[in-house]
Length: 274
Ligand code: DGL
Image 1 (cartoon, rainbow, N blue to C red):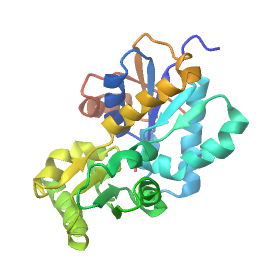
Image 2 (image 1 turned 90 degrees about the vertical axis):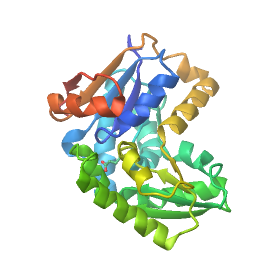
Image 3 (image 1 turned 45 degrees about the vertical axis):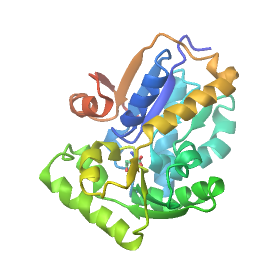
């Protein structure tokens, strides 16, 4: 067994840090490795095969680093790669390890937020086209109408640090208006992309007050807490020195500059060449 067994947290870029932040707040005792595949981000418009290949490469790296539990904190990768990894790759490469995603923990509870039974789901093209949210939410809440919309400009705005700029308002308003024009009864909007919480201020600004905007971090952290209580065979392997290490496949100075905003604390990353 490896000397250190951190929890791996993965995203195509910075977005997963919004989820990692909530996980680390809820479960501060464990060790963590975060990997942002910034060099190949965004994943949102890429094909199923490409997202699977990239995500699997990153998951295999986490395993080599001693992680036995990896959280894919990216909706695009959860939608397009997770099932194949869980069903086809894990039994072959590491049957004892676990890889979890962000879609199921969100779908399990989102129906509790809506009174009108009408939920808007905003995500990348990849997440929306996979239809994963529609399918998963209706498993738990068959009466909830799910209205999905891809917001392809939002990840680039966030990745390039433009999420507070006046230009961002245009694209935030554009997609929200589009969503509400075709489903005016929506009272809950799920941010089904881990990058979108950075746009929260602007999203709220362009929405009427009665609409609740739900980011995923807290939902995923609560679900992981519950998972670890139920899976003591995994939980007992995790090391507990409260260490957090950050890796990026792109420039570290750039990563550290942006990452601090997403994570809410100073980040110092190392470069990873995959
Ligand atoms: N953060 C990812 C998600 O949750 C999307 C970013 C990307 O397109 O790479 O979907």
